[in-house]
Length: 143
Image 1 (cartoon, rainbow, N blue to C red):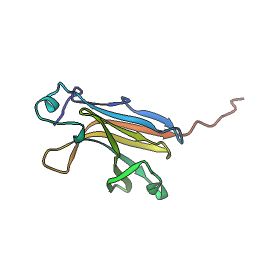
Image 2 (cartoon, rainbow, N blue to C red; image 1 turned 90 degrees about the vertical axis):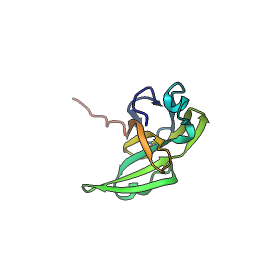
Image 3 (tube, rainbow, N blue to C red; image 1 turned 90 degrees about the horizontal axis):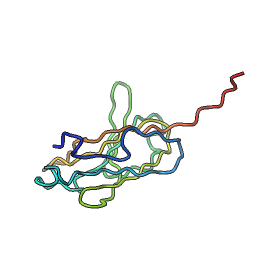
C-alpha cells in the first residue's frame, strides 16, 4: 500500500477553514503515475475514494446532504458519536478523482483520500486533512 507523499496527494493541501454556508468547493486526489502502485501494480483512479468522518450531535446527524449513500456507518467512541461516509467522486482521468464538499454545518470533518485494498472491500487512508467550518467571530466593542 502507498506509504509516502509521492504516492498520492489531495488538493487543496493541508487543513481547510471555511465559513458556514459558504460555497461548495472541490477536493481532488491525485496518484503519481511514476510511482510503483500506478506504473507496476495497476492502481488507477477507480481505486481511489474520499471518506469523511465527522463528529455529530443531535439532529446534525441527518443535516449533511453532500454525502452519498455508497457507504455510511455510525461509530461510538467514549460517549462521542461519529459518522463516516464516502463522498461521491468523479473520475477525472486515470490518476485523479474529484469530489465536492458543501460547508453547511459548523464543526470539523476529517477527510481522507483512500485507496482500495486489492481483493477486498476495504480502503486504506493515505492523504488526511481536516475541514473546519465555522462562523465569523462576533464584533466586540473594545472601549
